[in-house]
Image (cartoon, rainbow, N blue to C red):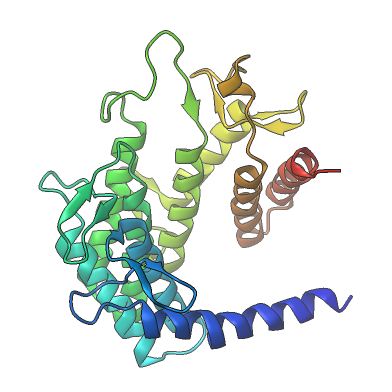
Length: 281
């Protein structure tokens, strides 16, 4: 019975007294803004290139600590540095976000998918709540709208597979759920492209349940046919228990927010099934 209270205390102290001081001391880029993302365990710099995902994740983390733990000036300043760097350097002229940039913010790599937009959206949303910056709210909504466009509009991105064997992956649904949850938490249940955050979440969970969770296999698939069929090939048979457990967490979190026991039960069903799949006896 003492395990969970002790774990909570351990994780809290490790986060606040070890992890965050490390990144504040070694990661923040005082010269160019944003955060350096390739550090050795002693804080020395391994590579000065910057992950755009990390700019958003770090900005969200600093702002969320400010919002939920304690309003420390150093956390708000760190979040501001990350969102300012995102806004100034991480968008291509057409509005799509890069995957990586140089330390100064020059573009290095663009990926076909739009997950940089998700991490930027949650950073902008959390910083809106922390700072009251109305422009950040607009940026958060714009980033989520861009994610929706590139992830679910046919032809918006280059096809990953040839038409011979079309398939769809679970990743965009998962990212759609958790990003909408963070926007709703920090901005309210805002409407984006005609649906509220809660409505987007409902739709993504419904598709995940209908097409990706297979009762007969007791498994959450990573990829399926566009209609939700099982692909009896290596791509289709490959499972990722860690990824699926992350998905279960998002669904259970939504169930807890809504006090919806059925959603919690569904998340637990995925967790139990994929824990068993991943556990090495």
